[in-house]
Length: 359
Image (tube, rainbow, N blue to C red):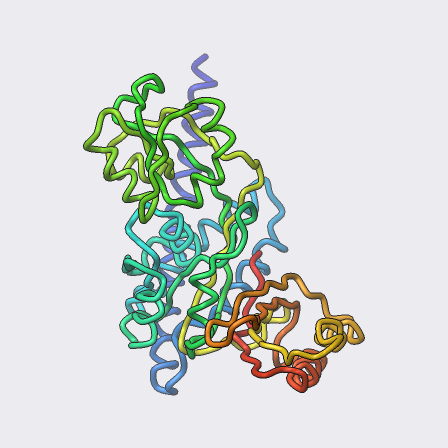
């Protein structure tokens, strides 16, 4: 028994020694980052390069021999990179607020906890914050795997000069929250329209006849519920913690694989990373066979289209704008050629940005 205790103590001593070495290396890494920052400042270079982060993640994951899991490795380095960037310059990121929304969670997932997060009241206000230079980046939702495209975001891209610099895929889990934590106390349910739609079947089966109230965000719903013992909110686990309310039921979404895709917007585009996606907006001329012709430039070059979505063109009745995602960077010759050919049958074409694909 004594030998086993000594063995555990020896192992704990080794862990302490390893932790000391990690701490020393973290400080050494931070100093090198500061040196890089000074060189960038002297050369008038951007201090944040999203493609470089992807290279770091991919290199470390390819070299990881285990047993430490790759997902955890990425999460840790997300925070290391975030903290090091904060030493160089405060990174202000605007998102569709308030705090504890899924947009907030996506922003933290992308930029780490050391960034400065600025909650905004609407999608247009996120665009405006970035356009005015008050925030370096903005994070806006663009589509959900269950409910489809977020029309407000696509509408903003029509007029905005901002570029897409990254995409974030967030697996969305909805919890039912209340003050008491008891299902039988619930007389009404608050949430944003999208989460309500994503939990419709569960609500019909478990809370039939209970009024569903649409509010501005899941966080607003949680805030309301924190003051009402008869109400419940559909929101995130983070909202439960932030507003000091209880989880009645976890993961009440109807679809198991429920993801929301967010886009990161900035005033500057991204260099080629080698594993990119390009987003495009365009309106085609009203001619016979035009839909077939607009896809042909990509098909004959073997370019993979990952999304195509149509939206009414607000300035012209019965005409439509198309939102297109494709694999590749706008600087790739075949992508550039395909877009030039597409432009020939368009009333207008706008490249929203080329950016690293979500890992």
